[in-house]
Length: 279
Image 1 (cartoon, rainbow, N blue to C red):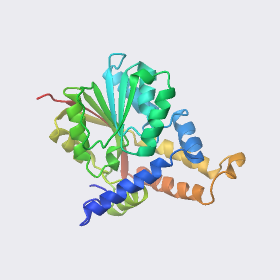
Image 2 (image 1 turned 180 degrees about the horizontal axis):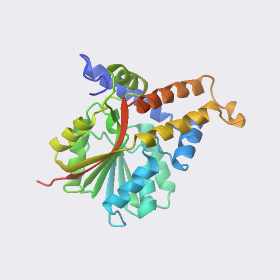
Image 3 (image 1 turned 135 degrees about the vertical axis):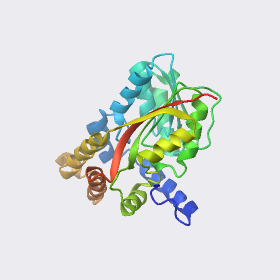
Image 4 (image 1 turned 120 degrees about the vertical axis):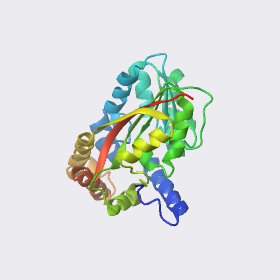
């Protein structure tokens, strides 16, 4: 399953997905993002995802990251995940991001950060970018589901690892998924690779990864969405005048849709790990 991207005019749908994502994440600095997402879910870190700090901390412990470790994030957004890992365990982190507004925020933030010497952000397309360096860990945090070509991103990950470990966190298809729900996720957010567990396992295996495993973190996704909705249902009176009319109801409708999809088993939220096999 791929969120409707297998239509006759796949190129047009891919362009729509990219443009939709650009529009959403370029504006991910507004009051609702800051108060309902970053502060409520991620202790103030600018993480526009569901996996958040628990996923990042799980990577640190699973891969035994430390000051000698080199980490690559594909689809690094505004750079907060890389910066958190550097601060948490002292590793070196590189982030690749195609969204111009986000990569500019990442570069500006890293320049002001005490960790700036261990951070590197590069504007690039993760489906075609290649590194001359080898990394111990590559991770994608709520990114695969947004990609018209998820296979190409996994090839990028494999090329950067050469024996290291891959970690993914993302929304996937559950046993009760419907074409209508996939289409709505595509229309709302540009999701075009909402894959089943079997599809993800197969893609990883076909692209040189072994020891593929995942854990179901759907409860975490539901808790996050419920927290956002709770804020939307009663935003602080002091902030209401600063929120454009209709924006709260739009956010409420979209988050309610995803919450229902997770609660009914249409969507699942999964954490994945795999090891790259060297040739």
